[in-house]
Length: 616
Figure 1 (cartoon, helix red, strand yellow):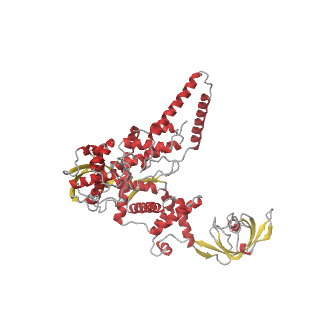
Figure 2: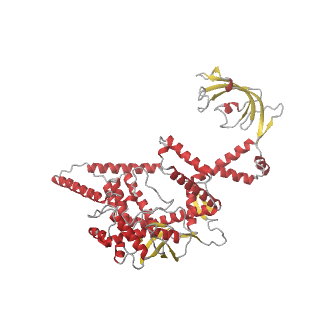
Figure 3: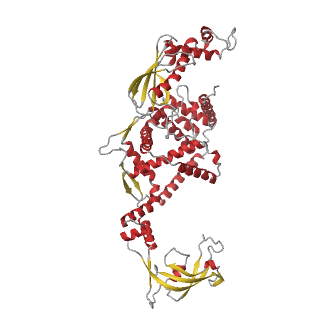
């Protein structure tokens, strides 16, 4: 079986996307870099001319009018060259796309053509002219005839003009950030036929996607549309048993002791308290007393509260039923996690003299008790705080579900025209990740290659469109809320998180210095923490309905049965495949030769797709 190289597979994906009018811009904070080992990546250098990558801004551009016209000095080839102001008009199109019309004065076309001629002259060696000498334009045009002559030179000049003019016009004149590569409405070689450098005004029309604006919907009775979001998500029920135990433990801390009446002989019971003297011994194999324990393991006037799980195993159970003045012999076992490793896990025997006994009376859960815990608390606010504390761990598990509900609600209160460039780019990345997952799951390379086509990409893009648009809108809204509400991450939190990542890398045997660009990592950490803060802010002001439901439990018996049936089917298939193939004879050899031909053909396709490096 032949193998498709990483580069060839990436090239197939790139060409499929490009043939489907794909762009190569990456949306900030929505970019999923193909960086993991073995992942099918689509490097930016695989893009063909006319589909160059560009970085997007980190925040949306300010709103601009739907159509405007301004003038500016846009092009200059040398410090002393003269050029007239160029005028530009902008037309807004659907899906955050624009059409920009540039009217370039004769002086600028002349300067651009002269600059192109000078660049070509450096590449030519013309008899009769020294290197660096000034060569007449006609001579250069004639020497360049094999490459297209004057029309090709004008095409290069137009491309030079566009590279100089389009970016400043969009950014400086109209305060817009282009996404992807702007495209000429009329190809440059066609425009070149009608351009005479230095004569008449030259018009160029380009179209491109731009970074969109966000528009909040007007919500009745709300100053901020994103306040009071509504939605619903599921999570497992509140752990009432844990809450009851926590409330009981809190009350235990404030229990008061009431000594038994003089002369009252009453056996100790669970919940009572007593003061004892303890003398300990290591236990012999037969359970009798052995060597005395160190003084640290014994003690006088020790208060013991009779409750489960408080002390070493056997102590409380051995004291239940004892009375004041009695000496009880109690067998215990030291915990395995005891700091004193010489005693950890060992059996011991204690002589315990009961000096006094008291009843422990728990306080009633009243406002007076809550105020004793912390001034100003009521029993209701105390329970509410305790519920949050008890539930914090379980609630953290369902934060992604909560955030998903908030995101869906957020997408309904704002409007954004999502550029097709972004949709295409995100679909390409998801498509590449899907191919990678297929290969990681064992699919053969030749089968993956069959799936990589413009038609399949188009289908996948349309299936993914709704989710991509929703995710982009949510991402943009979250960033905008952070700006509007002044939500920012303290520097110390960023440093703590970065340090935690480095510590984790060391534990996993990695060198923190090889984790990549630390500044990029810092930006990513800051972005992640900021988004978390925004979602927490939204949750505090939201009206989310929580549906408590028990987690579905898998039927282990059914799963085992299904696994067994699957194994039996696989064994039957293997038996069929192992049966003699005597009838094949010579045809088997022919099939083998056919496979070789297919492999050679596919390899040739891969080699043809794989790009060759060109000198810069």
